[in-house]
Image 1: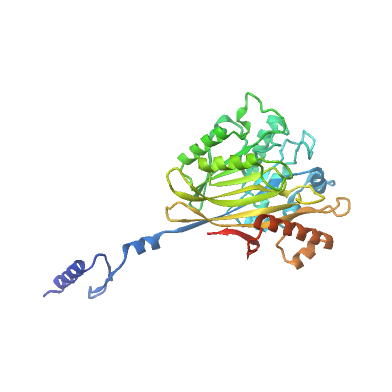
Image 2: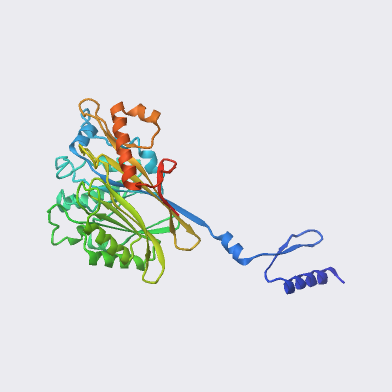
Length: 409
């Protein structure tokens, strides 16, 4: 029998005896058949699925009170520099795939006096400092959004655009207000929505209702429905709500969260109380009968401010929330891990040391001693203990790197 006919017969026999056959041919001088082997099609498909991951980090209120303006001011050239306020925390913000915060101030411009509370107007240089610190997206819907009128709202967005920070919650046009913010990061898609309970009594102009998204359940549900039509992996909703300085969410907060989860929200991130409120995960049943894990934190607390409180709950305590996402192939992504880093705002007398900055509560003792005095380290440890007890309760305090595990799947 000639060699080509022999090869054909061998291949034919294998086809009759195997369900799935993989044949590898190597071209050699003798044109020999090298091998034929069985394989499981499902295993190969699984091996071919690519794994995608996203690390999201979120902080609470970014505020600039008068004391922070004083610390940032350089009287030699009459400019403001905010970089030092984030220098000890920058590494944890910049290493994420996306870092988000609540900008609770406005960039109203130098023609208006720079002020802190009660009507915030911050120098534009803060925007660049936030960008350099690692922030990618800021929610701008809060009770201070209108502090410098409608012009301040729009100018704030322009300043953020100039430094390359994206934003949600306030808008410069009707079209922008009606557009769902979608971000695709490492093949995982997120729809972002943001709302506030009000604007401290400052009216939104009747001819510009699009300037800010206010909490209105029916409108929010419509937005979630619009977001679902875009088929994102996650719908993330920022809510500026609740009562200031209260440790726990009130009934209205809980009701709104329940309604939004039922409407299709996956992650709800709260701000406004200026103190940390609890977080929780739930398993809910969607309208199609599928079960999904959802997550809410009612208040992330202050990230940076000049607020202090004589007793608990501490207003100088915050967290960096870390959420790890995972996606296999074209399947819907899932939350893989939720963790957090307790933070504390170092606030030294302006006239003596002039230091206001965010500090990680999980930094090693020797590192803390380089930057903090003994009484400051004591205060940091007190706020850390409070935060861990408030968020973890009786759960095991398990560190993964510099972050405490809240939930792992």
